[in-house]
Image 1 (cartoon, one colour):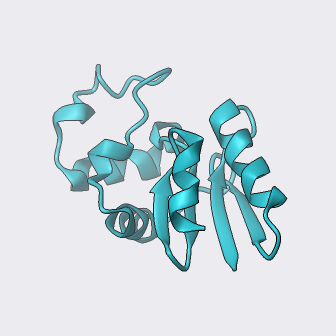
Image 2: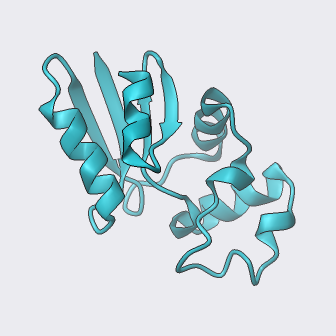
Length: 114
């Protein structure tokens, strides 16, 4: 099974999700440091759609100015545009496998797609 993690190595939840993936036999892990290589708007929209969540639900509010900018109340198109312009607004870690996508907060959510 292939798993792609949209990862921030400075985040403990992201590191834990990566460790979980790497510890699994038969899982080929692709690590994308999204702050260095941000997803396209189309990819980000697809990830949230496949996770069954609104883009606003994947908005990082801690340590960002998302609330001050009113992004928590905005539509998905506006939120996606903001995330693409400033990837720090993307909550992490997002993990994608053939079984789906999850925002792995808490990291145990990763089990749903392994």
